[in-house]
Length: 347
Image (cartoon, one colour):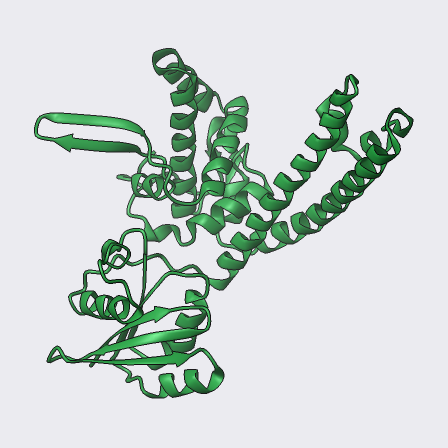
């Protein structure tokens, strides 16, 4: 049995093979089909391999997984030995991975299914396009303001509003600029509709989709983002663990008798965290329970902390929904079509 550390790049790998007696052998290969076949042929069924999570680590893992006993995908933000190494080389990085793999001390990242990964990529692309369209519409609005013209930004969100722009009010140069901005914004709108259709189609095939969209405030697109981010909910021992994964827990600094708790960590998926907060704001309109919870925190600690606390409370509900296979028949009264909550479960 060997412990193999792989420093993975876009077009090559540096391999450190560490044997049981502590000896190390190094090799550098390309990611060409020939070299990959040769590398897979050198692996034994009881070998263990460690790689850092990168853009192509999921692909590389799938290539070698049938050939070895275990593949560990390492969380680079938690494994700081490589990043803070005084002498950072490909060989040192691979050797560090192999050494800590042997000691079973590597912080393993969660591996998503291909369906979850592809859905997450779709949702991320949609978010990029939405932000780009917003910038274009803001530019059109700024051109109106520069002419002393009053125009509501909201009116530019529709095809009719964009078509209603009076081009005669602008110079020939500005007319060209607005035309390009408008056509690009309309093209992005069409692309977003196409993405929305695909996102909803792929999200509906994931386990837990029916339950999560039965929560008032969580629509198909939001469900897609949240399900892709969460993955297998059984990976999390509790709702608190899931909240930490979302970066929805406070920073803690303890030293001797000092115990300081600050703002939330904001670690993890930013899009999923933002989506969760937006869903919680909508959910408070429908759920008396969430609304009263939000108001109670707001009066005590302010609006900002109330929003975060409510989002975390909604995340706990989502956790229980996915964990227990719930589907709400009426979310406003927490009526479910599934059996009641088992004893010992969080609420």
